[in-house]
Image (cartoon, rainbow, N blue to C red; front, top):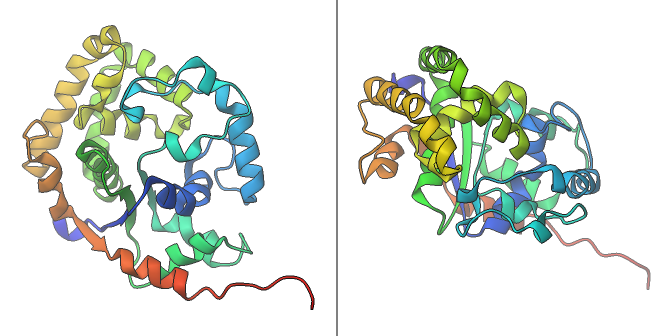
Length: 262
């Protein structure tokens, strides 16, 4: 099974650098507004800020609880604080390679440079130094769902079997800004890694049977216990590390542009 798993992991030195490089690729892949479309950075930022007040963020994403009401007012652009990890298939980068997004941002060009030697198809996950191990595990779980179709099929069957109890979670994920066609994938990643505990206590208790079944399925499929202290480290066997130096090399290769006349 491991032979069919190609998960490329790129770890950034900061949350800002990661989100700046992955924002448009991620939104192009799974944004409710921009999936499958081409758009400028300004369009993306304006739309996110305009809809910001519509989002209800899961507490775990911020470490110290949900966003306070004043931070959720429309007009605030907080993307670089809101998203702590990224995942997308290599096919989502095709439009960035073929010129559809010309001109690319400097960090987007560096991202493509960093991934140039990764044999396709692969699944990209991105984290940052100092990020929680559970976030890494969450992103790897997405990769496994994508790379192992027979596992994804069983996950979908398990979730479908709990259809009467999943609607509150699905509503929260939709409020979080996820697309409807990603709900099963997201529910599984939250359940397996325990991050679903960041939901309100009543909802977490309501979903306990679903979480238990999905964790048991993961353990049976990959022979790893999601509840073990070293779970995140054990998941590294499924990933290939992309040297951050390749990204830095891509940045250095960019020559500064001079503007004006003399």
